Amino acid sequence: MSLLLIIFLTSCSPSTVVPTTVTDSASPTAKNLASSTQINTPSPSATIVSLASETPSPTATPWAFKSLISPNGEFVANAYFESEHPSGVQTIEIRDKEGKLIWQIPYQGELPTGDPRPLLNVFQWSNDGSELYFYYVWSPDGGDMAFWWTGYDLQKLDIKTGDIQHPLPGEGLMSFTISPDGTQIAYTRRQDQPSIIYVRNLSTGLEKKAYVLFGSKDYVRVGDIHWSPTGKELAFQTETDELMVQTIYLNLTTMRQRVIREYFFDKAHFQGWTNDGKLEFNEYNKGLYQIVHVDLSNNESVIIGTPTPKP
Image 1 (cartoon, helix red, strand yellow):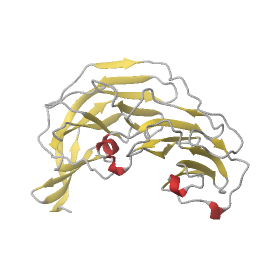
Image 2: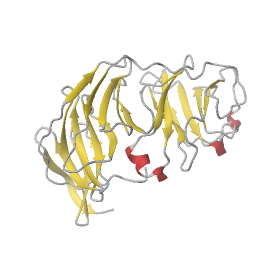
Image 3: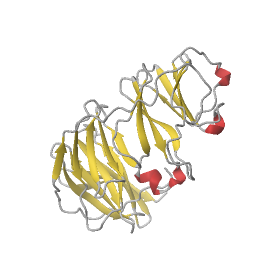
């Protein structure tokens, strides 16, 4: 992420509550993009190829730009640029702990191929290592697309069967993040006007949603979603065309929101949650850099350590 969100720490906005809608919607229809097949020459339109019967030579393994080891240590998922994979196609490979190639997912050819072109990339393993989430993401030079929107077309691969499903409804750019216990996903979609933040149960498809509140200015982007350590709260951000940013707190029990900070682009950076449930900001003020923690129970700000010259 080359474009950092910089945040100006100002006085707290008054608590604001917006109407909440809770929707018990059915689980999205699973889109089985392909079933397991024997190894064939990958093509851009191919979706997934079973390679469980082959044991590749370690020297034949191309360089991966991103690797994720499953939490159970049984598998590793590697994402490759087209120039680094023998097929000449952007590809994700899943290998077992002995190095045997189990699954291969080539670029699916479902997205625009203009410049910049989204990268096929690994996103996250399920907590038990039985599923791999993957998606299409903008490279850092994607600007706001790379920062505010996590990416396109989140998909989920069943490591045992090779079946692929889409866990989220809708098309186009989204911001999404999975809860610490792996059971829920919070997301926003650029297609929604006005913007909505959703919290979906990954097993049942049941979800809650709330319209994203407006502060003193109209925003044009919503994203950068962070789960609290307990999984019971969220913090996310909005931005206007004038580069005014808001950090918004969402209580998942009540689905009520409030603006925690409103700030300009070039004055600070929202870091996320601390282990004790506070929000952390890096603040830049008069040439000095400092870490600030905000206590959500009383909106009190505490400077951590001694301010230092801005790096």
